[in-house]
Image (cartoon, rainbow, N blue to C red; front, side, top):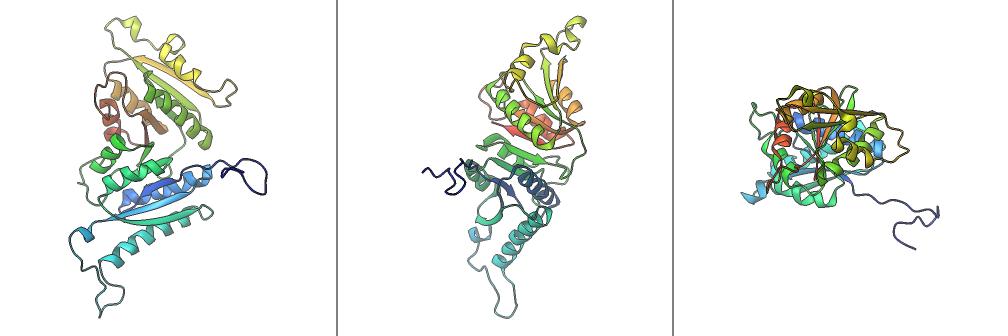
Length: 288
């Protein structure tokens, strides 16, 4: 009997990798944990809350002090990790959730852990980020390097809307379509497929034309013929690809993007994805 079979039910059991979410007690990470817990509950996946701490790199005096109860750097880190775990449990009491306290820089630790995850979840920026930044360096690093899809969360309970997937016909775009369709099914939302065509000054070529757009049709062909999803097709020719995506993303429950497109040479993260991560007001999932 294989490890993927139940010894009692007699039917195969799908073993999936867990969702991993980073937590550092910042407001952004709290929203990420709440969203991740809700997503784990909706999909039936396990959730792992990860807190990274750096003090062991700088000192061996991790506490506690003999005259102060519950003191010391290690105790403080354990308290933050436990707080993230409790937050997830409160949000979704029935999920399988655990916590890990790991020594290391968040970008490096979470990149490594992404190989063990089905989805990596992060806030837009943590405690170390600058207040003026819309998305932090850790989130950008993970979007460019993670082995699994990464969800950058701004809203733990977003308003109702479509799941928007921006497509360009690249392999990453095709994988984004599949991920977006799964998310739409989980959220009971419609799926909006958006392609921004090459821009031309000729007015006729700028008109919406999803029916004759081969990139949109390629995306639709990836979906099962019997899908019950409501599909909305959009195709525009405009000068700014990120501008069109951001405009539609702000009316979506989530936007899903491939990490890079056909016009990105040698880069780990496309310019459109970079712009959307910075300027979209809602949640963004980047698929490699």
